[in-house]
Amino acid sequence: MHISTPSANGEKKIVSILELTHVWLESPLFPEVLALLPAHVTVLSSEPGAFEAGNAAAALAIIASSLLKYTGEVMDACPRLRLIARTGIGVDNVDIAAATARGIVVTNTPDGPTESTAEHTVAMLLALAKRLKYGNDNLAAGGWGPRSGTLIGTEVRGKTLGLVGLGRIGRRVAQICRLGFDMHVVGYDPYVLPEQAAALGIVSTDLDTVIAEADFLSLHVPATPETVGLMNSDRIGRMKPGAYLLNMARGPLVDAAALLAALDRGHLAGAGVDVFDPEPPAVDSPLRRHPLVIATPHSASLTLEGRRRMEEMALEQILTFFRGERPPDIVNPDVWERRRM
Image (cartoon, rainbow, N blue to C red; front, side, top):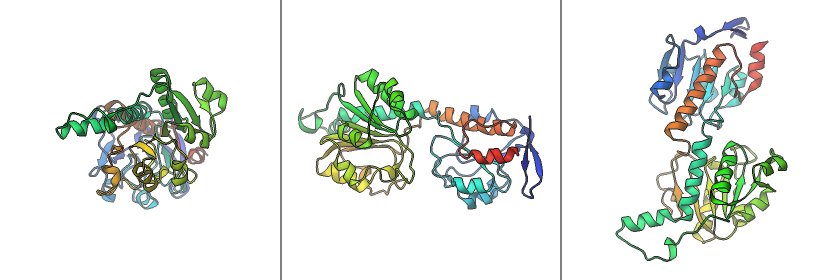
């Protein structure tokens, strides 16, 4: 199957699987995923996290990760580029407007990281509640107690989980915590109807109520102009005394200085952080070593199963496109519609 697409000079051209001759990889793929590429395709790459125009110039498609910024300049260095397939949900490192202006389709894999990220969130929640960081550090330092103070954890059963964002990951976190731990779950998402939330066992309410009622507040929204700085000093100050803040979504959602101030004055009991602004955080960032923070290096979706699933999905988006079919997860659908004309 083929589709007609405009070339650089405005003429129609046929795109087919045989035209997919070169794919550039931001990061290495699992061998079993690479094996899914047609034999005639040449794989291009640079050092992980680096872009070298000379190595990528022939690419018709890119499998992108999170380490690079895909600017218009990067796209212009690949004059044959037709599609950028981003692993994972977030596409904030891809200049969507620049891609759209150049007729480049951008896709993501929103179903790929759901389970891994949800499990990571719950692991963070439990580690904070059970004071695992304190217990580990105490034992490593040769201690054995005292069995009081910072070593005393809390049970999560019956506590309130507050979710900001009820997409795939937020819903899965709610399911695990509600059914597994008998937690009460409240959530805010302007795109989810109250009856839809209720069907998931989630009490849908406004943002201020979720923030005020949560014993554990977990963020699951993208970084957009509306959500950057979502958890600022004012909103963090309105959280319950002794509550915990979890961010596995995007670093810019949380004012790091405000979070640290709330921890230092004892207002919050702890925080679980997998994302930062900027990334990576500075070597001397207090978030790296604060005793009340469990921090991981943007690795919530980094499991063997999750990584393989995202890579397979990204590659399938490319193959679908070059078979002349619509990829299922297009971020800028107007480009696809223009290509069909």
